[in-house]
Length: 157
Ligand code: HEC
Image (cartoon, rainbow, N blue to C red; front, top):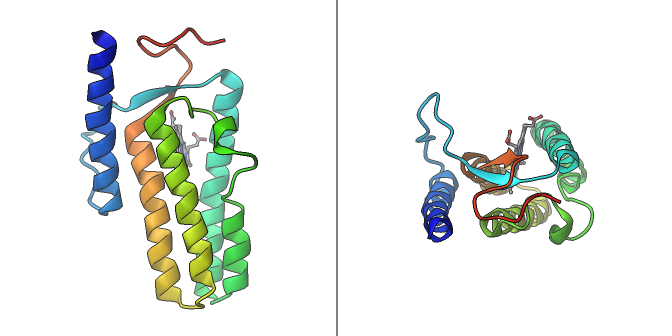
């Protein structure tokens, strides 16, 4: 019952938030509140995930700098660093379905952004990057790391 309820709440929360983000709407999150859904990760996964995330931010910066120079090969090289090693199934948080779907969507959007560089058109690449950043935003608005077991889940191994 509790599990079914929390699943329902999560679906509503998570499904509505990405739509906001993908539509580019401003954040509806009130200051001081954190109602994001906890994604269970081990301490090692938590560190790895945050390390990859900080890298994502640096990559985006380099991507924009290359784009400003119309260095499309540089944009592609930079974007390829957003791709993870190994299949999605090996990533932290993938046991949470919506998180995994956002992760897959994110990777698909990176592929499209890479494709867009082949048109050598700044506007097209910027639109693709905006879609990619919609996934960054959607995931951050919906999820946070949790080192504790989520309600109804198996205890962490
Ligand atoms: C599928 C989900 C997902 C996607 C996509 C995603 N992130 Fe994250 N990101 C997370 C989670 C979960 C955290 C940890 C939040 C917490 O609990 O503090 C995080 C944290 C971060 C942090 C903070 C790292 C730290 O040291 O605390 C940065 C910066 C970040 N993400 C950047 C990005 C950028 C930029 C993108 C897109 C290019 C991106 N992320 C895409 C899930 C995601």
